[in-house]
Length: 340
Image 1 (cartoon, rainbow, N blue to C red):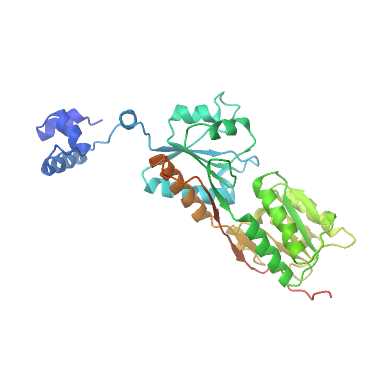
Image 2: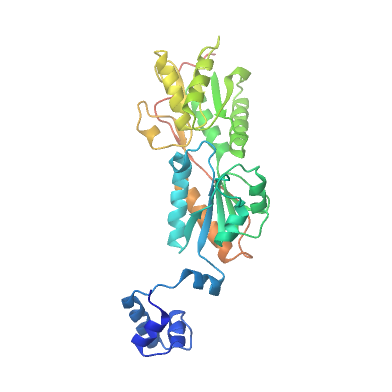
């Protein structure tokens, strides 16, 4: 590795001068700085990260806590796009990202211990069991933290507008003539699930629609098999729904399978709507009616706010930022005659 001593020899100046030139000290002339930097580049010099961290008390490294209980990892359609956007923005600002080890069977380190061990300047929590005591420990620490799709007191959070998303989706389905609307909602007791379910009930109440209890079924996110079973139960009801909502587009594929297994047509015989706006949902036939979440903006905003918090901890507002999605009308919700 090229050292400061190597550069000093090539430039014919002291090691101290080289160090000051590379760190842009005011007592070094512009010409000397330019010459030292040019020689350093020619020799292939790269600052030692560990030495830089000791000097600046910064590692320019951000930790990512992502623990998906469904074990889909970075194949998770929603979070993979959010994290890709987060990564691009962080790298543009000169930061690297490192995943915090979520496999508790492999080491005895807590999330906070791992973050301290790695010297992270900050941490983004994108997906995890937010009721985990280890998460609470990390949230209460002095490390800058931004959360995605979950809010904590005194921490910045970036939220997709799940309330408006469901309201827009249900309102559109209502405008298409549907009055018997079922919801296979996310099974996990999360802020996302609670917001969407409450918005579903609230929107239909405002529209004057009563929702039978049997129209509401819990099913895990991104689980096509459970969604398939839930759909069969709904279709077997004495008075089945004319439209079924699913917790996400991926789970809705299970609904597609159950409907087609009975030789029913979508949307002529029954309508289906998803959530997320994943790429595959916009390539199938019929195109899925869904809410397209702005994963690019969510990821970029999370990175920008976390970096602001790292660079300016006293002056950065602690706030909840809500980012709207967009209704994709698609083709899987058909128009039916409204029953008076």
